[in-house]
Amino acid sequence: MNFEFEYTKVDNADEVQKLGEILSQCFNADIKKWEIYRNRINIDDLRVLRRGKDIVGGLVIYSMAQWISEKSIPMGGIAGVGIAPEYRGSGAAFTLMSQAVKELYQQDIPLSTLYPATQRLYRKIGYEQAGNYCQWEISLSDICLNSHELLIEKIPNPQPQLFIDLYKQQASKINGYLDRNLTIWKTILDDNEGKIYAYWVGEKNNRQGYIIFQQKMIEGELYLVIKDWIALNHLAMKRLWTFIQDHSSQVKKCLWYGGINQAKLLLIPEQKAKILSHFIWFSRIINVVKALELRPYPNHLETELNLTITDELIPSNTDNFKLEISRGKGKVIQGGKGEIKLNVKELAPLYTGFLTPQELLDLGKLEANEKVIKRATEIFLLSTPALADFF
Image (cartoon, rainbow, N blue to C red; front, side, top):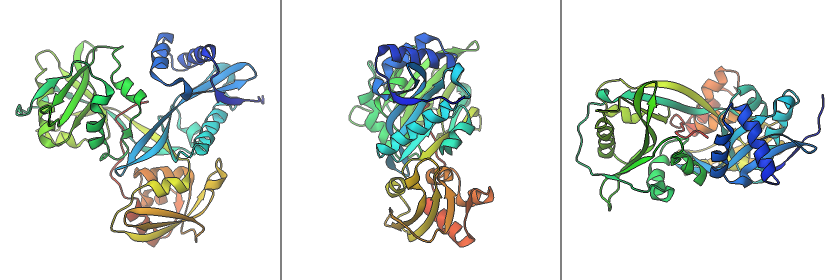
């Protein structure tokens, strides 16, 4: 059955509530959680799909950015994508996401990232695997550190503005991390599921890190669940590990979130930490020219790469592009000889550093000769991309 759909912002509080009912059913969540979520986000970030007067479904677009090789790239984060059951199978989800991507393009946003409930839908829209998000666990008895040199100071009223500068100092060096917006910070500091505890590492005139956490009972055991933690050097990281360990009289285990590679575990004597869950987030290149020009490149390279890109959704992304690299910056000129051919979907894991050109070639996801592959590898080489925030 063919339906005519319209993609718009919400018009009033009744539509916000209706969307909340749809999404609560989609995600099997209590409607009370929608009320909490609604108060956390900007209502202008809600989008709905309509059929006549009916709300068919909707989503949220977070305006924020993502650190790619120490550069903050503007990014549209997509979340809460849901369609009412009676409209599933009608093409509503494809229409909703297609219109969201086109809107981001009109807003000149180069990149979009999301956590897919299903890969098939988002691949049709041009998204692809682009980085890791893991839940980690360690028993406090396995930390085995004793570093009390740095001061630990409780933060009585934690607010986002207290942490942003320290967060950016470290997050900017972790490929893929969010340059957070206020909604993400509100999520971190949300106390609806338990009291929030926050502590500084270091003296007032020399803050070297912080930790934000909750204490939760999980399957009969008390856990320290880290919402966010930053350590600007190894002394601060040792102090945080020790601080966590100092809860061991009551707390048995610690949970935190981040990438598949956790350098901080190098400080732990034995390999005792484990991954409880592993999720791969998706990205899409919304504007090929802008994305390639904003992304940093190795400073020593003076080279070029000719790409042929196809994009079924954004026609202006379908073209030949010459990427000229000089002094760490890229300039894109339309045209060129098309040495490397790929879909915009496969450009995403290349862009973030999640997959190498050789891996994509081996999977039949791009075309290029050996010489071009080696050059592309030098150009796009990055550390494994990660996220520590779920949205």
